[in-house]
Image (cartoon, rainbow, N blue to C red):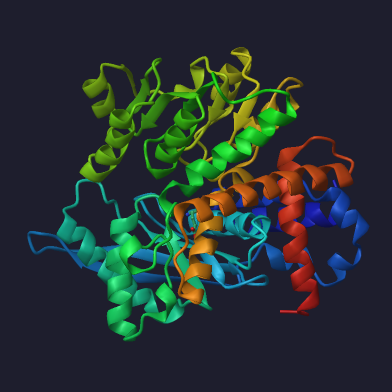
Length: 449
Ligand code: GLU
């Protein structure tokens, strides 16, 4: 490996041993950049990589909220404004009990490259809180969102930092946060957030966009392989917004999602999650706040496997669409033993680095990386920002058409970046290189800071 890259990875590991997810993503991204950095010795002089692995700014704040019985609770809130070289910071907010500085930084770092890949003008950011929405009442959620924004509102804005949803944050939470933001600022400010409701500036197709985009990307992979989506089976994880979008689009295109998962285990439905009733039920399960996938198995008579992950199931395509580090070496070995050809990451960093390397080494496997596959979500957020600033409202078809075009371009740019660097058909390295190059050029142009 290039010695400058090695040194930067080494420094991050030494400096942040207590931030394992962040160290993991830095290693994953930088280790793809060998040929690029070799070609640009000037990067080292201006310490481009060392600057790129440090957030421009990151802050944490106290969020106090009152439960329905009148008791106060104190959580930790964060916003990591990682890199603003190519546009205002942009990225979701995650409310989940395991949120911590390492998780925030890994997500914001990934976001920087993902947003760059979309070709739109969006820098990388991420935020959230260690608040667990499971079992909370609607009033409790509202009070939490309001407190969160009381701490954050000064530091975001349509040209500064544009938050959106992520795990635990959907349309309802965005509505409460935007309401509080507007109250405090006394200004609509072009919506500031994305993923808003359709009545106040939200974009059609934004809720579906991450899932739809990942299926559009997958279609490109299949086409390259002389295959098509119709008739294929897909093993997914999670049952949230992203998986819901995959189920909708996969069904429309004649494929079948056969697994879902949750913190309680996984569901195997060999008939597919492919009727409007089943697909709508995912939304109902999410809204119930129970966070249990077993409810699906009980309702539709599917198999439920308590405490297990779905990666041992035989399917044509694996799409880990739940959370980070969901697929470890033991799961990767099962996937290889099942002779799966398409491993399409969807959740942010769903694969541990050793498992990812192992899967990429398999001669008969095609691996696609999450930062490209799931970029349709944030890309459509970018389209929402455009509509807000033009004070226009595009039709669903128009947004979907643009999303489709962006996903095709991300795929093409990744393929070409890898080929240009002599790496063959390597979608993982290609996405890292293509995402990196644009941010690197912008940072070089903007001088030292
Ligand atoms: N949280 C999503 C992601 O991981 C969406 C971010 C956004 O729309 O800003 O990309």
